Amino acid sequence: MTTPSSAAIYARISSDQAGEGLGVQRQLEDCRKLAAELGWQVGREYIDNDVSAYSGKPRPAYLQMLTDISSGDRDGVLVYHQDRLTRRPLELEEFAAVVDAAQLRHVRFVSGASQLGAGDGLLVARIMGAVAAEESAAKSRRVKRKLLQNAERGLPHGRSVRPFGFDDDAITHRPAEVALLRELAARFIAGESLRSLCTDLDRRGERTVKGAPWQTHSLRYILSNPRIAGQRVHNGEVLGPAVWAPILDEATFRKVVTTIEGRRASGRRAPRRYLLSGLLRCGKCGGKLFASPRADSRRYVCLSGPDHRGCGKLTITAPPLEELVIAYVLHRLDSPALADSIAGRSASDAEAAALTVQLAADQDRLDYLARQWAAKKISTREWEQARTVVEGQVKAVQRQLSQLTGTDALTGLGVGGELRSRWTGLNLDRQAAIVRTLITHITIGPGTPGARSLNPDRAEVAWRL
Image (cartoon, rainbow, N blue to C red; front, side, top):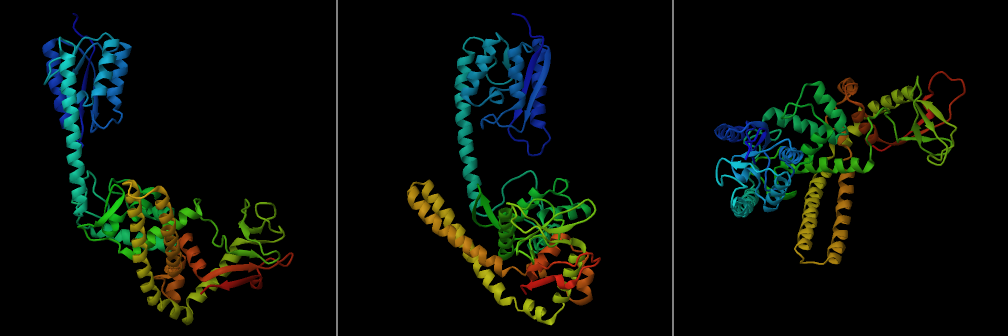
């Protein structure tokens, strides 16, 4: 029998939380030593680091090795131990079939059964494979039970990367990051978009735990993750309070989640360019005015046609109208009547807190119904009937919360000169949220042909506050 001239060395480790690859490196060293003792020439080393052989997930290096064996590029295989090659009996049979089809007779292990193809080698490998599979299954059961137990006790889940806002123990707060998350949550509730917040974070040089720029999906995940409210989640289900202190209180967290759901339902994705989008009405037909940019100007236009159904006979230039509305809004915000209205929010805040508790209870009821159906303790019909009722209650509470928290955009604005100086520093999303808080709609009347400036009488404001 000839000695392999282009053998494969395969190495794998299931978990490498430190990311150093030391376990794989030891396997490679022992395989190289055996190759030298046997006089084999090594053609390539195939490495799957931090990849389980029991889970059934694809192992890129392993699959590439099988391809190379099938094509004849490899005439031998060296592995530290059989359980590094596979822990699944079915996969062992597939490996044996590939090796047999390629007429490869050189498969050796450093530890355990010495080789696969000699004598009863395959029989021994099958027995060892079955034992390894049972050991992996038992280990998996133990690990899952321990994870569930830790979750029920509110302990953090082991991880290689710490959560943003926490130290490496995933329990202790990092003050600077906690302050940042609270700021972002408040600004998001006040009307700023995730996109604009990420842009601001990038401008300020703020980075994620991994040192990467913030993206909307990562910021959305952190702000909507119950962990930030001091809740322990396991397999997508909140089990109860965690051992760490919350970064956001329950009421603020619920506002964040409600805002996310509301914006998801609206479907708005493109960055805002117009302050008054959705607020303007045509004074001729009552239809909505739509943003309609030209190469050299921004305009609001009453559009005709099946998609808009307006009269198509009214247009107004955006910048002077927006400047006029901003002046109205700043004057309104500086009025004593509105200040008294905002100061009297304590009653609605208490009501919002009660509604938040009710919303959490309703969500728990939905989770309970789902578990009862999964355990076959209730029928699909019973589950659907009960779910419809509870979901209706959830939507009603969310609508009430939305109405009560409608003045969040006004929080912390200040008054007088402070308010006016801060306005220009607010991004367009926050400005639009403030305008919508104060105004239900603005009716635009017909303009005078040939007029070079905006007549303020064209804009009739319907105030909300």
